[in-house]
Amino acid sequence: MLRNLSAFIAGGLFGAGLLVSGMTNTRKVQGWLDIFGDWDPTLAFVLTGAIIPMAITWNIAARRARAVLGNELPSKPGSQIDRNLMIGSLMFGAGWGLVGLCPGPAVASIGWGGLGGVVFLLSMFAGMYVAPAFRIRFKAMAEALS
Image 1 (cartoon, helix red, strand yellow):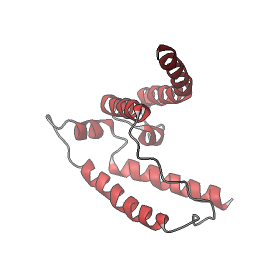
Image 2 (cartoon, helix red, strand yellow):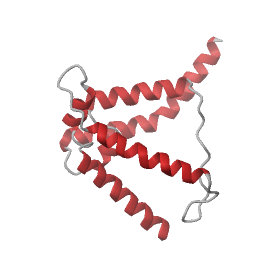
Image 3 (cartoon, helix red, strand yellow):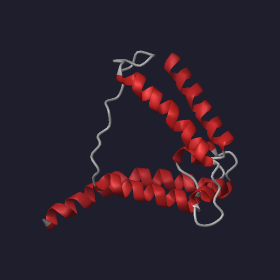
């Protein structure tokens, strides 16, 4: 029960932060990405405001064996740059640049994002669902060619 309540509160704070910061406003996000046009630098404060607390949190977590609620902390992610990371990063960046939403803000804006937001969210979930099958297929094709 405490885990669910903590997750609900954390998710609510995250969503509220996305709304207040403007990350759910596609025009603001696209303005941030348009460095050669009508650039809007305000999201730099959002990024800075996210990086600083996370750096502190990672430092604290590195010295702990268990989370505050008693769960094991996940292992440190790998630092290897491979094909999956590159393709995923390109797809994420292209979607973010074209639409102005990434997964968190897309979910946070579902209540007022209109039909376009719903289409984006459904497309995003469909992509997440089919991606593992494509990865297996592409890996088999690459092994057959080598």
